[in-house]
Length: 298
Image (cartoon, rainbow, N blue to C red; front, side):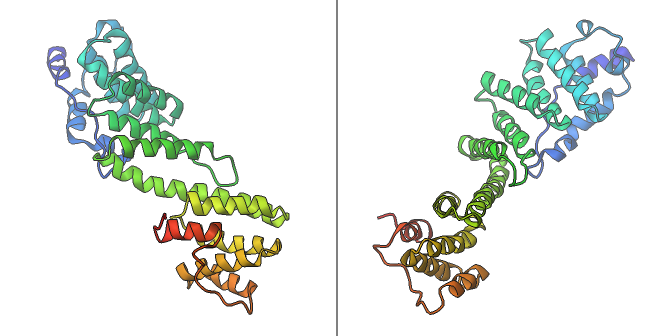
């Protein structure tokens, strides 16, 4: 039996691929599963009493896969890490690094997952699986995004890492999934700006509120928060007596979101005022309207 298992252990194993662009189905790759099943009966495959130094790199790798299949990702990561320690120059060592990152990610040990994935990128920046490693880093941040009432540093880190996937590996499957997550992440960050802006608005800090709402338009102009940001600007401008800016902003809101309840609220605030399209020589909102909505930068 041992000889039979040893022969099976040297079968090359491909890294798990992302099916449908998500890591949750990574271990469903048929080749990986078939190898795990083939090796599951090997005594050394599960026996922790055999010193790792007496096992080959492929045998230790097989143990790591077995732990993953058995729902023990931290134990799997430990095995994959041992391969680099014991066999740093073997072909299996490269696979083991990214499998270590994946195992840590599955365990929810996101800091360790990022460290392993970054190590893979540092050592093999041009490898075919570099996009996979960068995507793991992005997911380790993305899965830790918190509600808008809390600090959003992790959200910004997620956005930066997701943008790195898209910019560095634009033709990969990971880039397509990352772009979807970028949209959601930007919407979340815009929500944070809105949350802070409302806080300032309620307390009469109108200039601070205006800065936050303008950030939504200039930085997150494609998110779902734009109509409310425009309405809140109308409120803040009116509170400061800036009637022209309020009318200008409401006109942009009505032009682009005529059916929005936020436009209805803005119109109610400007009862009796005729709302037209913003003048070409208008203020900041007119400029944003031309640049973001109409695409006119000159």
